[in-house]
Image (cartoon, rainbow, N blue to C red):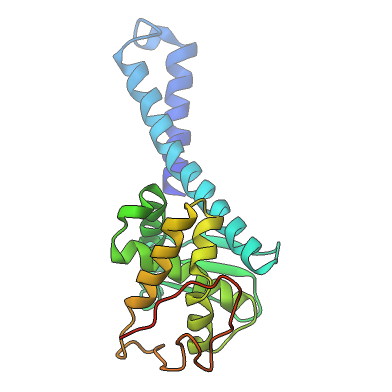
Length: 206
């Protein structure tokens, strides 16, 4: 909302500079280009945020065949309240909420999926994990394991090349640690939580 307000403010100053050049003496002076540039910059931030939220939502919707899913990148203020969670959903609701940092990592992942850092890869897993909750899997360990088996599909739905998506999915699964609260030894190929999905790609932990 802050950047929307700033964009409107600078747009107003641009409008005045355009239609009232007597204020500065000329229509196309340095002042005009500065306020016009600031208008574009401030407007681009919320537009970019909405674009990616829609992109994430479309991928999540396609993954579980639910057209009602929406994704929200929460603000810095809201992020303080929910700082324990990289992402979350409210039971029974199709809305996925992602921390601002998670959204930024996910955007960076899409810019360079082949060279993505561990946190950027994990952001993909967070989106898949929360999508599993929307699909009705409320147990955290089951949702996490279901996400491991679908991360490559989520990546491809976001536009990542299939070969890179598969490698990413295996690397995400390989990042797991028994110290993670959602860890379970049953989440292995041929384990009790293995859904044996056709084409599932994941790595057996060592």
